[in-house]
Length: 80
Image (cartoon, rainbow, N blue to C red):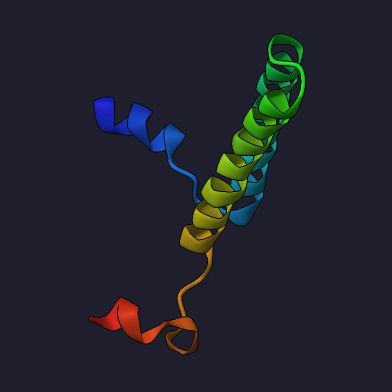
């Protein structure tokens, strides 16, 4: 039963991955806007940029994992 429930939380397609990335981006921008209110000036902008940069890194990884596998796209470091 637990495995059936756990399968609901697995990202299988790129469409699902894009929906998750969109939700992460909305949350990051909201959190960043709170930082801008709490820390006016360059420190707020720095924290805002950190929030959005985390979404870029996570989104790239999620899209990379959901990409169909083909031998041509692999790097040499992935084979070791």
